[in-house]
Image (cartoon, rainbow, N blue to C red; front, side, top):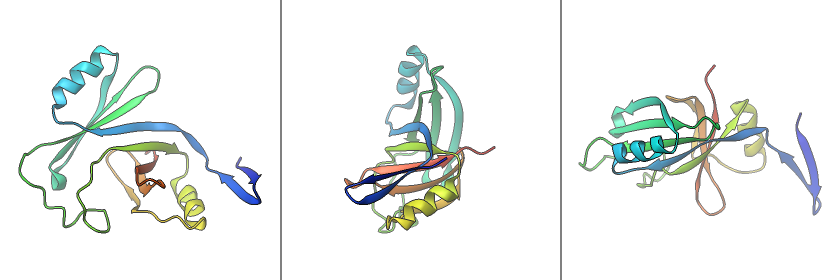
Length: 148
């Protein structure tokens, strides 16, 4: 069920967000980060390699359901970002907040209908179907639907 609110003469559609899926941080010393968060009760649940970006992704989750994704570069050499998903090819941090959704296509359609564009359209990734947009201050926001 979707909720609609009337605020200051604007009809607001509330997205069907299931919660914060994960927070992603680009890290320099991956093993130190894994060791630290393991001490806090997090466990590595998934690992993926993005060869084209020379990047390793590690998903760490806590028994409470909180998850962190660590992105670490496999090489210190400069990365060719000419094929980057960002429209202007800029080098940006991979830091982002990911919100879980039940149906990515519906949520993307609802957001586009409000005049908001996506930097990365829906696609299938290592951890689910996702799309990226930016909030009003330029922070990267990911909508992610788990693969079933």
